[in-house]
Length: 105
Image (tube, helix red, strand yellow):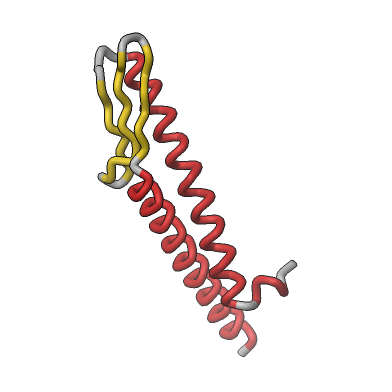
């Protein structure tokens, strides 16, 4: 299993995919908490934001709640998570490699 992730390209691709999955999960949880918040309050509309980007708008229409996604901002959130995860992974690997080289001396 370790040998698969020795290749930097494989690590970056895996980090990007995991970052997208993490971004989708964070957006899902934010939208879910947005619905919970608007249903428990007297608001008629609410905008769900992540990092200051509106990702989902919820409006009360009659007795129902209608949501409108902002797909470009949700995609941007996924890209942010992917980039951060890829950078953190590579920094951690570089630090581990540096430490193991120092221990070998």
